[in-house]
Image (cartoon, rainbow, N blue to C red; front, top):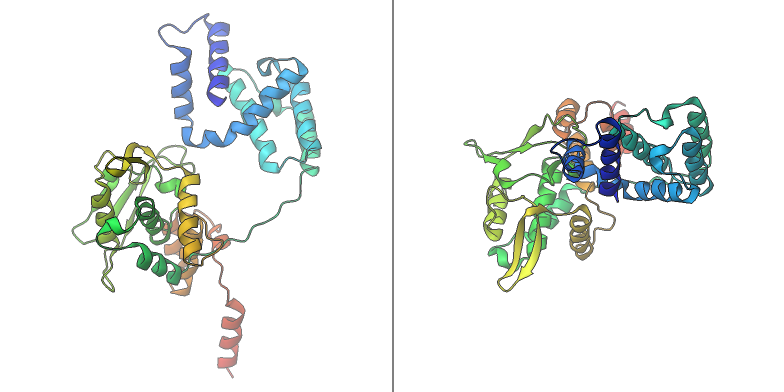
Length: 339
């Protein structure tokens, strides 16, 4: 649906401005346009696109011909069903993008629409804040003990992928969106023994500047991060051009990697749930490693500036991730020690 809408918008722009855009098919232009706007994030707008499109059909007016009144009507409908703030923002973003494609000013910018939007937001369902579960050091140790075995064939391919993904999320303090598109060729095993990872464009890096992060090669209790990564790469036969966390499929030879396709968030989460359920770790998600790593770093007296830089936080937003469970005890103990 997203691609169809963009294609229609681009066709509309071609016809309005030039009649046709010589030598360029609308489908090709749509693919490159979306790709230039971080294609990986647009799948989250599917529901919003459908709502916009259906509203246009209901009122009998194509979205490409909307004015402030039609946008206000869309917001009223969203408010009636108690749409979340994020859902309302996505609806407005979809309309903005479609008008941007046509080279026209979006009708969402007017004062009238802005006021109706405030009313819709007041009607939204109450936000239920979910607590962030943490993956602690002992949890990570349990996952490694359970899944890091030799030969690797003792462990299901999906669980091998799950293990190394958690290594990146915890020891690298990264988001899933940071590393899901990393390819094997983006890894560099340094002479120092550490491993350096190059990351390209992500949802928080719309300019595509990219960044690198490094994980230690220090070995303890017979385990090191680079050795686990090499064990994983060899077990799946991954090459430089393959995604580090690829989709997997079955074949006569067993499970093989679909090297040109990266694993989806939902699949990676499902794999993690299987492992954590077996190990008795309820509530762990793909973000738990990042939260736990930040918290453990503070507990280990790693400087907050180092943690902030390592995790890619540009402001005090890091504080949201740090969840010291015993801060009150630590404070009162310090006070008692002064007696």
